[in-house]
Structure formats: C-alpha cells, structure tokens
Length: 181
Image (tube, rainbow, N blue to C red):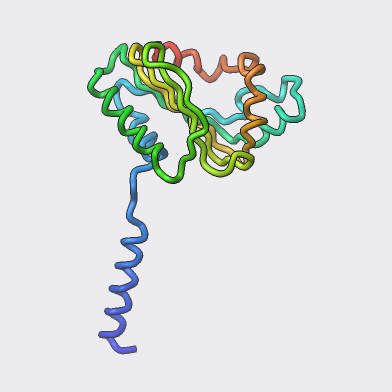
C-alpha cells in the first residue's frame, strides 16, 4: 500500500469514527454534569445498601430486588435555586426523556401538587433502566434512575409495600429529602 492510499484510508476511518462517535446529551451525562452544581443534590445508592436481605419478601419482590443494581438520584431545590433555572432544567430533562431510547410508562399528578413521569429503557418485562421524574413548582424536581438488568415492571411495582421498611439511615436519603423540601 502506498502512502497516498494509506492517508486516504486513515482519513476515511477517522471520519467514520468521528461521525459515529458524535455524542448527544443523555440522561447519564446530565447527571454527571450536574452532580456538583450548586442548588443540586445527587446520590448513588447500590441496592445492596438498602438492607432488603433482612426483610421477608415474596418471590416476586425478591426477583425485583435481585434485578436492581443501583439508584442514581439527582434533585434541584427551589429553596435555594431560581425559578428560571428550574424551568430550564425541567425543559432539558423532558427533552432528554423524549429520545427514542425512553418509553413512557405513566404520568400522574397535577400542576398544583406536582407531576411524576415514569419512563423506561427496554421492554416492560426486561427493563434495564427505569426513570422516575418528579416536578413540583413549590419544591423543585428530582430524577431517580433505577438501573438493573431485565427488571420486570409488574414485579418492581410489588416493592411498594416494603419501601418504607428499607434501611436508609446510613445513606442520608433523609438529607436528600430535607434538601428538596
């Protein structure tokens, strides 16, 4: 191969590589970019830290717990933050969740008390990421990413009755909630 052919081949390779690796904003990069920003709070919680192994669980609840790896939580508080920033950040997150990657599972709430949107990545019986996005014009917003492997929505929903029994004392989840409210 002569030098000219090598230069053309390398140019084509780098062009394809550069175009193929064009980075678009994602919810993950949003978390990374905002975890140290003033008026935001973030937490990463491995599911093993919640003490679910000490609870008596149904088979479906155990399957749900076993399918979850960790929780990423990010919040923005209006106690110290501005309404303009809140509005812009909510708009950004909504835009990210409109990507083809995310499927909307449900929406609940109202404009007075707040709204919650739940999205997921994968199929309803094989979810790899569940996103809970809650907004309140009085308090701020929170985004919780539940990361796992082949999570099943119906089994995850069965965790509702045991959520208040999980051990969150050492994780400062209360600090996250205090920051928000």
